[in-house]
Image 1 (spheres, rainbow, N blue to C red):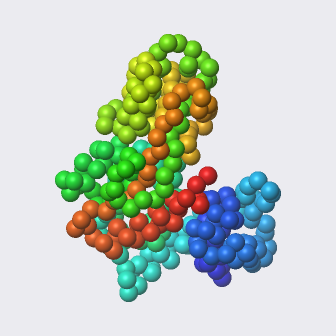
Image 2: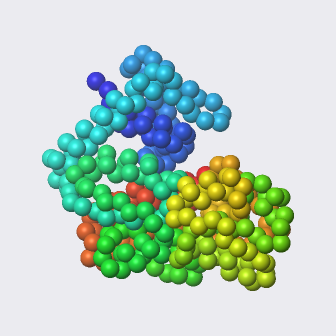
Length: 284
């Protein structure tokens, strides 16, 4: 009989690719995660994980086990929710800013649906300012988004610098007018970039506007211009432009904002998972 605690450590290790990260998210010691994997391998008589100094990857046997492990944990969560004393059920409307979706949302949702299978999640992805507007009219229960430095709404998760990005910084800065790739208004990153350039009296023009980060990333990778993003969320294939070549951008803060009157148990259940995964020590 496979131990569910061992399987949980195995799945989390696959999600994070790190024993240290898996231990932090599970809130147990790294040695405990190691023991769980060793005991799981011993019980199956197979090596499940390749380990080296840089990363952790699953073996072919580990990949074969992964789907079954997720299924067993999912079934255990459903049974626990159905018969547990504190089972949660209902609907939770979550709003998430576009850049968070691209980098961190998948693992958060995996944990949430496993732990709370009776909760129906309604997900909205949009610009931070749009999400706050929707929450103001009662359309969202919980928002995970950005705010400007100096604003006080929400529960602060972490603060991060914005950076200028381009496929080829030298080519992007060659002309007299800086080509900007940006979300449409009322985007926080767009406003920060424009205000920074205006302060330095640098000419700019918007060469591409898109409400989707994947669209903006495609334009930047095609060499159309310069994109602004939080440093840890910089898309692959783009280079950070050195600080001495463009104005310094102010930081942004990522926050959780529950709606007044929303189901406190549901919002706190998801909030606790988000805080555990999007904490300063967990940033890449």
